[in-house]
Amino acid sequence: MRATLKEHKKYMAGQAECGLKVGDRVEVLQKAKSHEKGWDNSWEKPMDLLVGHIGTITHISRVEILIKFYGEDITFGYPFYVLKKVKKARGTK
Image (cartoon, rainbow, N blue to C red; front, side, top):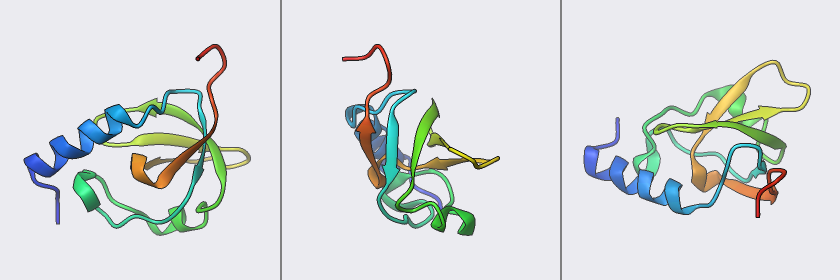
């Protein structure tokens, strides 16, 4: 079931406050359910394989945080609450 507007606004506020930026290296800590906690996107089965892996944020949108994983040809969009920053982007404080 899709997130309500109220849930999505709450998700967007949390994403804005999480401090993640393009270029940050992040670890995927756990799976998420599709549309969970106001995340307006779906969790796909191949994303399961990347839980515990570290990738680089390539783009942040209203819907997701895109992560590129070394050696993978595909980029997946994750909700902010399953990500943990492990290294800041170069040139950021």
